[in-house]
Image (cartoon, rainbow, N blue to C red; front, side):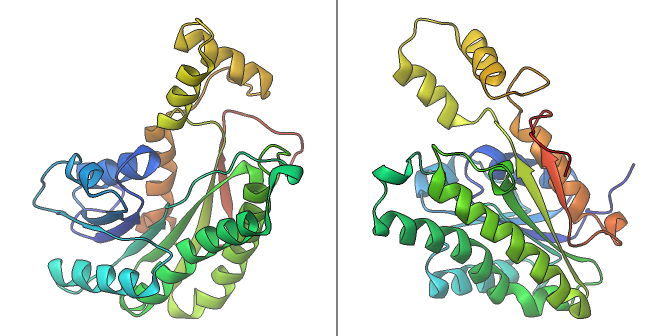
Length: 258
């Protein structure tokens, strides 16, 4: 099925690795023009050159830098923008007694700035599209809090709530807003944790044990490209009647039915 993404323009934050990078590559494969940003210039260079790709270093917490990035990206592709993927973010492995007020402030700042700054900077461009879509990359933590990730769980829940509000606010502008909520995805953070654990266990076995411990029904970690597929499905013009919802890409992990 042709998703209808070819020749359209999409902006992906945090596109230098993991889910963001998989999304950038999937969009390019579909024939789209893609602008992406990250904080690490060397990682961005490793994406490679493509005539339909624009990259720039940018910290999503800096509103001025985000505006400059969006302006430059739009200029590179004829002033057009059809979709925004808010992917920039990270997890903070801490329990309540390990957190400081600065931890809470930093976590909330990153998560909310990572959605609101790119959206505010690109809203006028999106409004001009005939198929505008925003996808906020979130986590199942938003619905199933994890004590070992207490600040991240709370922030993720707030972003899920915000996404629902934005869907209502922006509907009049013709802008759809949806979320993709991730479970355990096999990105660099897990290979690093496997190395740090120094268990002597092969990565595949360690991964399966982790999945079993976390209650993942499919018994494995997900792949970044599996998340990218869900993101592209929501970006696609064919999804024109889907807004204000979330899709879980988590291998069946869950403690509830919602």
